[in-house]
Image (cartoon, rainbow, N blue to C red; front, side):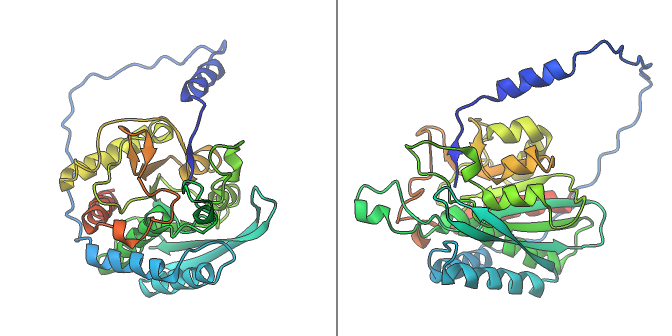
Length: 334
């Protein structure tokens, strides 16, 4: 995935303030201070998220090899997602469209979308990317740099969690609609250390945000997963998430606390990350957050990020459980 962006949300805030200043006098409304009884909605206990099952989904993807665009593994994993999501009762779309990567190569995007409870008007979106990076620029050995990344934590872990969520939702239907989106071509951006452009990353979500799979598609909010399977992972609050969808951050972190996963979902904050949620917020205008492994003490992503060692040995079922159970807590209490 992605990169830590170099510009500040403060500029966006400043522009927002300017755009809100005009000569129109605000309407004055009377505030009713009459006390009212606040009735809190009783909590719905969600079904259990099975971390063994989630791990098996991650392992299947890992065993295919790197899901680099244009590869046999990429083709097989798209078919696998479609089969699994349909097995769990989802209405599945394979959204295709053109994309050109930074090196001038032309690709056909294949975003996989599974609609659960498709007739529900109230919907939420949960997403992850599934593609593998075609090279490992963080390796020190020049020959290893040219190899594709296994992409097990960085990609397969999020997809594995979402497949298990789909399985669980079939056992107990939610009251809302849930759209699972597996984005293609997230990780084909310009290598770090050279000239970078935010639009070289996240090509699948950029395409979907401009042309959703259904006209006038809306969701109440979205939750993106990225690198959500490594042992000892921590998920601090990311900058764009807090700016565009602060209430969703609060909702999700509260759900994590309810489940006892405070050690994973920390209250620490860090800068803005160019990830799939950026375009969902900016273009599709759906408030969306990013649950992403970021080590604030090191100022870096998880240690095997964009390396040949991003393999199955890094995946911990406890981390998959923390993320998946938190998602279910949100879904069943929405």
